[in-house]
Image (tube, rainbow, N blue to C red; front, side, top):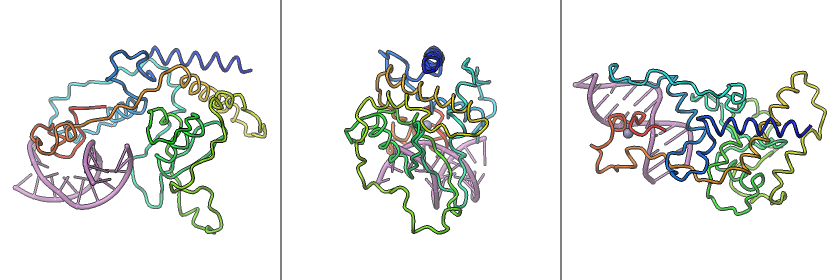
Length: 252
DNA sequence: TATGCCGGGGT
DNA sequence: ACCCCGGCATA
Ligand SMILES: [Zn+2]
């Protein structure tokens, strides 16, 4: 029952907190070197896909990443191909809420972040301040617009613009109780849905517990040479930044 | 608006 | 190899 899920979630949590891929550095007296999952991931992606337009081959002093001891099975379902990094015709990127039983899809990342902050995290202050935690609760998806353009103008499923301040229907702490609501609609007759359902449960438990255990901490601004030194001191930028390539002095 | 940077040019 | 920039995604 739920106790098993809690144990599983707690196990995943502790393994996360002792691995290099920590949610937050935990207790952070020396705060600045914090990385979010996304940043760590994108770093490992770029190191593996070798975005090396490189001008020098003898200076590659980074052999191979030591591949963190975290079991891939516990992470792959959260990180499935976030951005295919290519633009395609009539493919629009949308942002989908990952919260249990919430299939909300919005067109902007700021919109989905507000959605998560207000209705799931129970932060009813509608300030635009992002506490860097919303990233774990939504994902980017691609939607083919051509398949939708048939017979529209009759439906307006969600208002994409920043119009309606959403009703604050769940009071705070509803996220904790919401994770107990699972399985209300037991009509999922897919054969393989059992495994993914369990993973989803673990996922939402990990998110909930981490949300409970870890303090809120703002996202570290990724300052690169341009912003650090400014346009007037362009000669202090690293070569890549001067050539409008990916910065290599400040890597995330 | 500004920043980061890919793709595509030059020399 | 070294350098530059249009244009785009993103905040
Ligand atoms: Zn740089």
